[in-house]
Image (cartoon, rainbow, N blue to C red; front, side, top):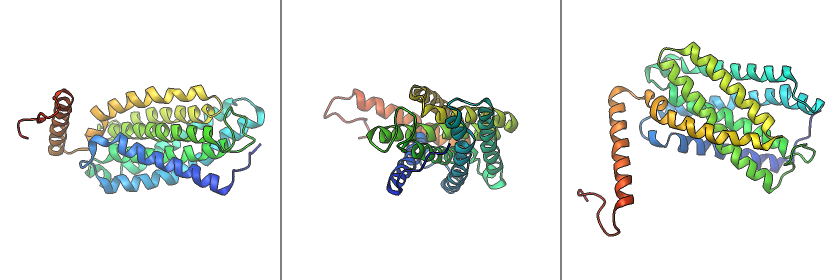
Length: 264
């Protein structure tokens, strides 16, 4: 049983929320990489992520959400299909990140991140359009403040989580373990799709996104994203990070009116 779409301006507002989430995930997730990563590749892969994310979101709706609404239960075969959708997304990421121009510039982790932002952002848009329908059977339904708040939460954490998975897969490609990265990332994406698609009916499940993003971001900052840098840039990046941490500590500890450092 398919549910009708909300009005056009509702859909436009929900789409805007999803796109803002992509921006938040880019600026927040790669905040320490500003000035170091390959911007053209990252932008191109964001566009690919949005295109493939819209297509895969339609498959998630057709193969999981609609069958679940029809029988008011979670069909096992639909969960298996979700895993295959996660595998298909991962295969698309692998094909794009193993191209010669991406490998030469070591851009796989950062481009994988932005590709994931596009995937997650479009999935959020599709889910919000479903929830905004007045006939939706979840706790939150219709277009209103609860739906907007849910949208903001999903728009922040869902694309961010997809970006972390993309950076993880890109790091696996650079480290010479692409096939292991494919299967692990496919499983992670399949589980994330299930969490999102089923979580909009069981909202407490969505809280699992918060610790997953926080832990994943720590690994991305320390391991996966820096792998995108050439050795010379990696040294400069680490120097800037150390200097930034030192100055932040000085600012917190200094007395008002006293210079932050002797150089000032």
